[in-house]
Length: 431
Image (cartoon, rainbow, N blue to C red; front, top):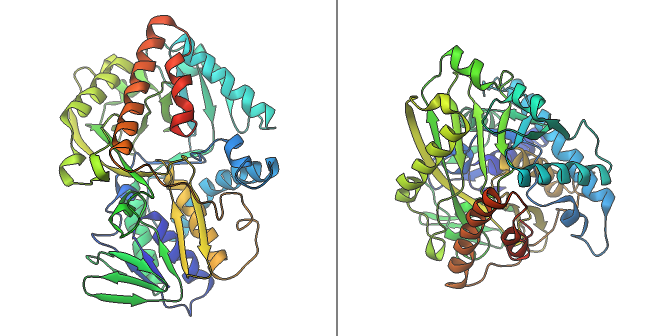
């Protein structure tokens, strides 16, 4: 077995394979260090979120499969607990706290979307153990942001320290006999072969687990678009500040705007807050300087202070960013091509901390030839279409970002769900 990429996807795959069959010879090839990419830089949500809707998942096969879509949802929900179980079993102190997620509604349009989300869940047979609507008072008791009208709440999310989880997982994999070759970039994956500048690695199965960095593989530039997400963090905040903010159970949080934001309270009482807003870079370029965009960092600070004016005088001590992988149809996938011996998983659109674990267990079963509930889930074997060639990719991606910003501004003025967002949704994979 050769696994290309030592992020969560590659490490979970190696972990479960080594556990299931200790006789396997497994190597993980990583161009930088384990966890260098999105796995070590994310906002610390281990959630049951899947980037595609239930409706889209149900339509992945040749016929509508509602039970398959619900099965994937249930598998994702169980995955949150599986990540916590595996971390505890391996002695990984990932600062785990399963407080769920609260998504605020702070405008009339956002509240309309929150109610529609819950109604949609009910039509799919999901109950309050999956998602429920909070009124304004209930929402503020969890998170006392400004202008809160209500919220949705789902219990299937844990706040984690991603760096601790990925580094601990790398150590656990090595304890099981897996070799991780850091500083070993793979330039191309062929039938049973991963090509590197230092020589070829041959294996019965090669797993592509490169997510936002997939574009660096020959022939894969249009497979996933690397989209940047940036994050800021405050100094440790005093107890009286947290009394005014909330998040007593370390719930993760967001709101129902179109341009995604996300946050959590860390184990050492910092507030970590991130969001989209950085541009897509022409030709899917990934560069270290793209990790820092002072304009976006400023927007994040302004947004956070708007949410919590008590943070006006707080010091922001950390800021960083990185690329995540977005498929053209916004639908993650996992699979194994038996003929070529190439397996893959990815396209998480930022919802990868939990989904990578499900991918690792699914790849284990696929590689070992097991017919299980996991291998029959509808995302298995799905292949997203390629992104458009440049400059269409650059124009479309950045036009979509601008449209979502305009949609949020429109809703702030009109109080009604944005016509811009409705018009753009078909072009953005339903998002």
